Image (cartoon, rainbow, N blue to C red; front, side):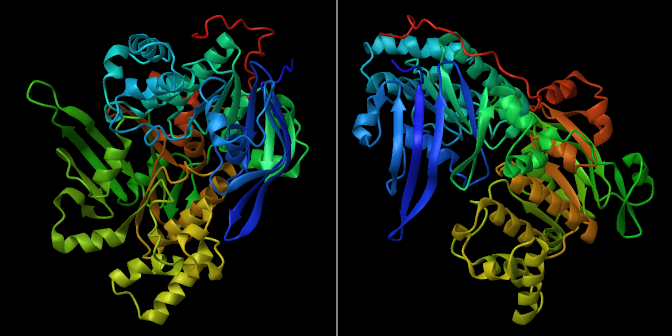
Amino acid sequence: MTREVLQVSGLDVSYDVAGDAVTVLRGVDVALGPGEVLAVVGESGSGKTTLAQAATGLLAANGRVTAGRVTLGDLDVTGWTDRQFRSVRGTRIGWIPQDPHSSLNPVARIGDSVAEVLRVHRWKDEAARRRRVVELLDRVGIPEPDLRARQYPHELSGGMKQRALIAAAIALQPALLIADEATSALDVTVQKTILDLIDDLRREHGTAVLMVTHDLAVAADRSHRIAVLQGGRLQEAGDTARVLQDPQSAYTRRLLADAPSFDTAVRPARERVDGAVGAVGAAEARMETEAPAITVTGLSQHFPRGRRREPLRAVDDVSFTVARGTTHAIVGESGSGKTTLARIVMGFQRPTAGSAVVAGHEVARLRRADAAAFRRDVQMVYQNPFASLDPRQSVGAIVAEPLRNYGVGDRAERARRVADMLERVALPPDLAARRPRELSGGQRQRVAIARALVLEPRVVVLDEAVSALDVTVQAQILRLLDELQQDLGVTYLFISHDLAVVRRISDTVSVLRAGRIVESGTTERIFTDPQTEDTARLLAAIPGGIRQPAPPPAAVPREGVPA
């Protein structure tokens, strides 16, 4: 009997695209034993998710295995049909998807979603399944599991939704658990909780974990071995500590150099000096020399929750200032009020109390006649580069749209400015004729940045603008933002749950918890000398320490598997 839970040998996978076979995996070999964690890392398009899908029969309709072999334990599943794979999904394989917000049926109760795998495999009767669901929700750390089982996805936080997905994935204690970017959308403290939970389950039941991730820091913390993919080929594989401390591949070395979690240096605080950005000591000294780009004073946003309940204080008496030409980061856990604060600053909703003056505009008191000037001075870059661009327009038309809306120049002048802006964001001119679907995620985000900056705004709000990108593209975007700030003197309000990225790009930081600022200061001071337990807990949750998880168990009894 083979020891490996998963064995992939010489795997080739191709997709049929417009009648042509496009090979996306070439000769890939990986193996995974009981209780082991294998992290598959690489940039977008490297083949990470395709590898996981091929191992579980979840390839898209136009994808197929063209060479090689896949075995699950003693089963050779190469060439299996979807119907055959259904017999092992849930029993031998559990899958934790990336996005907890879109992976649960919005009209099904949480308990019904978790119980689905039990029903599919006809596990016991309905009453036993209901009891099992409550046990599972309790096991993954969801409070009041009986209540949560009766609720709908919109009533749970992102972290709770992800726990519910884990409960569904482990319901029948599969030998293999596949986590496909399972924590990339979560803040660092929730991420740590979820990863701790997966690790506990692995140690208790000897579950093998295939972790697909673009986050090298998570791989460093949580895996025994790493496989590095580039362009569908395996560039390097081996023990995690060895690969990270002594990488043999030039591509692996580049990934490590780009990963913000491995770069503990903090950018020196800066100030605006005669129209340029220069290095200085404390960021607070800037406030005395010129009016801030953003001044938020006593800002509150309360949402009613019925007659008998206190209103939800999403933002509660928040105050901060941002010097011109600098980057101020707003960080905090999910539900801390970051996005609500960004929406108020952008004028998308009117606050309950307080004021926000942005680029000289009092946002809460904007008259319709002033709104156009405000929108020209203040722009936003959203998190998702796939959803924020009009799929029907060309890249050139997308970047030119703000110029057309504000009547800037004639057609020739607009074309010149679009070409100049595309060059600034390091995109080749021929991309102007393409549609967003023809671009990579990193290229789309560059287009979104170009569109935001083409009117030369004074303030740009970046809401999780790099969280969906792999480390190489992320590093390119961060360098681009820094260069554009130095060239144009633009001010950034950077909303992020990724503290490693914040450490790299920001000058000053405000830490939010439950709608209130618990600490503010220069990035250097916040990261080296936190003054509150909340800030210290956030910093302690940043992954990236190359700390090996517990070794796989020698033998794990599985008597607890539901019969």
